[in-house]
Length: 322
Ligand SMILES: *[C@@H]1O[C@H](CO)[C@@H](O)[C@H](O)[C@H]1NC(C)=O
Ligand SMILES: *[C@@H]1O[C@H](CO)[C@@H](O)[C@H](O)[C@H]1NC(C)=O
Ligand SMILES: *[C@@H]1O[C@H](CO)[C@@H](O)[C@H](O)[C@H]1NC(C)=O
Ligand SMILES: *[C@@H]1O[C@H](CO)[C@@H](O)[C@H](O)[C@H]1NC(C)=O
Ligand SMILES: *[C@@H]1O[C@H](CO)[C@@H](O)[C@H](O)[C@H]1NC(C)=O
Ligand SMILES: *[C@@H]1O[C@H](CO)[C@@H](O)[C@H](O)[C@H]1NC(C)=O
Image (cartoon, rainbow, N blue to C red; front, side):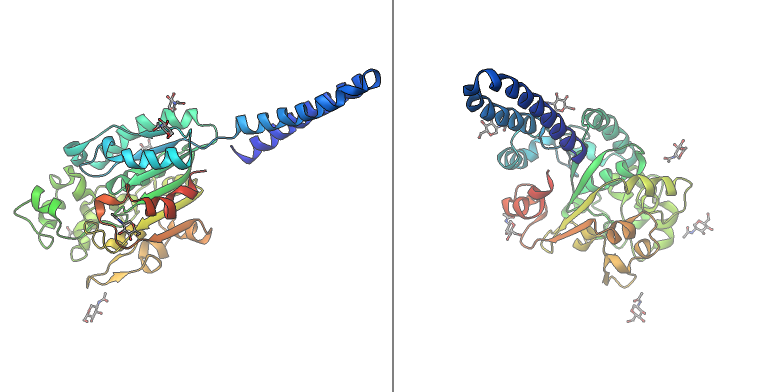
């Protein structure tokens, strides 16, 4: 419940109470014994009014590469346990191998699924977006001028891109390694795969800047006319919660989950040293200056366990689901 609504509920409750008191005063003059019954009743009614209107904001969950909603049953149980009654939607779109579809196509699909949920949520919604889903969510936030996302929780997402050999990569493109994947990814054909949309090869910046149709735009590294609007849209969120950890094993470098990334020597440079941060191209610096980015580094969590780890949930997620 928003502060404004809480206040108006309170005012409604109070004016109701004063009518009751007036009524009581009237009754009391004739039947003084009634006051003992009516006073607790008033308090009960005020209490009821306040609790009935108090509820948690709906939560929308966006899954990652090769996932489907069934992978999130544990997270749903955690939320049910700590925030009973919360309406949680795990969007059932682009599941499993469909998640390889180009990210802008996925963003469009998720937009259509998510928009009605936002419209039904007068006080706004929270987003929990896992892995690749974190990039989909960031693109949604940047391109939806009227979104009402309160807190955006980015759960081990390659927010600054990916550059690493993983089992996914080996399975998908057996003939490529991180050192030569740019040859495929930075082509029109390559950009038809989601993972190429955020492939960020620090040794081929020019090709990335010229050919990445997704991350280079989202970061406003390649100039585009809607950048100002996208930044304004992203900044509508209240909080950005970034969660990642050194034992992830898939996100490379793992610090990409916290907006850090490799320089041209493959040395990880922290978020505040990134050009996109320093130039505040898409709002990251503004968010941080507002004090609205929360960072969690959680060791001991491998990539597929982020959404089922109770410690992660209790430490990094639960308290933001208000
Ligand atoms: C939430 O937890 C309660 C109590 O454990 C259980 O009865 C209910 O089925 C759960 N609801 C969901 C949606 O999991
Ligand atoms: C949860 O939210 C969705 C989308 O707004 C809505 O269709 C559905 O009825 C809600 N469910 C409950 C139990 O309120
Ligand atoms: C990037 O695009 C510009 C303009 O189209 C072109 O001049 C430049 O050679 C390209 N760079 C690479 C590495 O493809
Ligand atoms: C950019 O903004 C214009 C006008 O608001 C809109 O029509 C267009 O679809 C936007 N382009 C992108 C890529 O969002
Ligand atoms: C990369 O390392 C070389 C040799 O150590 C150094 O000269 C160069 O300045 C480094 N580049 C960056 C971007 O740090
Ligand atoms: C859960 O998270 C905690 C805290 O980061 C970590 O120590 C533990 O190893 C994790 N367990 C699993 C199964 O991921």
